[in-house]
Length: 153
Image 1: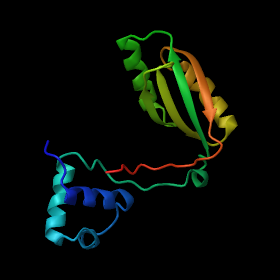
Image 2: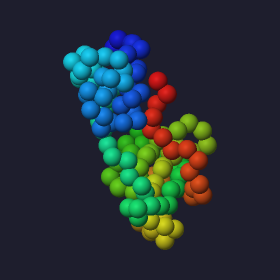
Image 3: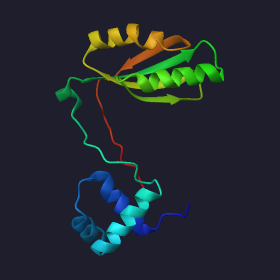
Image 4: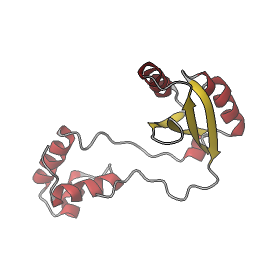
């Protein structure tokens, strides 16, 4: 894969903050012709740099105000348990992110729920029933200081 040039980086910076921008406006902001802009964005998609576009929702307004992070320790660290745990995490709609990590625990989960009552149900009905789970530690977020998906490119 070839490296990104400055123009590609400009296009990606703008698209990260406004995925619904018109090609005309994107071209204006990046000092390109609309045709060149269209071709470059298409190439960035074809190369897999742009993986999709999405609307960003206000969690509180869709009944998902509680944000929690959960450390998960597995009872065994074998390939079959890793695969089974990962598959279960992918199927759980309340889990927004699940990362295998190095350190004092095996996975870090980010989940959004309605409230503590919903979290308690999630813990009892989903988390503890996931394959290989020995122990969990949960951290409820009191304040979101920064929440962005914009990569500093």
